[in-house]
Image (tube, rainbow over all chains, first blue to last red; front, side, top):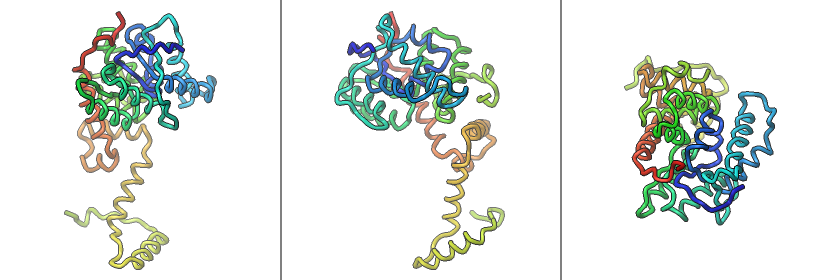
Length: 203
Length: 102
């Protein structure tokens, strides 16, 4: 694990990393973006890998967790990639929402460094947006993981078709939560993925 | 305004008895219709699978589902999608210096 305390403007939590690392655009994210997470989220990835089986049946939540965590952690472990960093969060939060909490704590301590907080959980996003709103002289926003895919699309690092396919992959793995994030992204960009995805979106 | 067509009827001997007991227990009774409406809405939402929720939201977007039915079935999801859209739009306006690798 690289713990070099380099904080990039984009910070992502465990669930956001899992959601995006399971899409076929993850390698593109790894070679295009600069991304930070916390040691707490890194340990959550590790714990999920330990507690799930790589042989879990396809299309189960367990398999989704295992594969996503393994793929995401590998990118942070890669010493050759200094664009992916893990920063230490002090004090270290504990409990079920420790990962999300650690993101919030690090933003509170370094509000000027971060501009985009990527979280899967809407409550987590809401409380981080309050932190951003209260911080002076800084502009930041907490958004859903679809934003990482958007950054690729906006910079020309992927096509609309690739973006839509990745949304479809995220949708199948993240269900209703993922769907809401994807709908919001499609409305905001705006982009029409209808021609690239099946009508019922989940097949 | 309620009309006779709004009526939902179902059989439930034990439920009726239990309802009457609570109704008699409370001074002024209980609003059975209101409780039933709330309970039914809650249970309907709970029984939906992710796939069904997605199908229903797609129908809502196409105008095939009324606002009232959508609110019962999808809860705050419509509002949530709207809120996230706004946050997303604001995020797209922010400076992306150092977001991308050199």
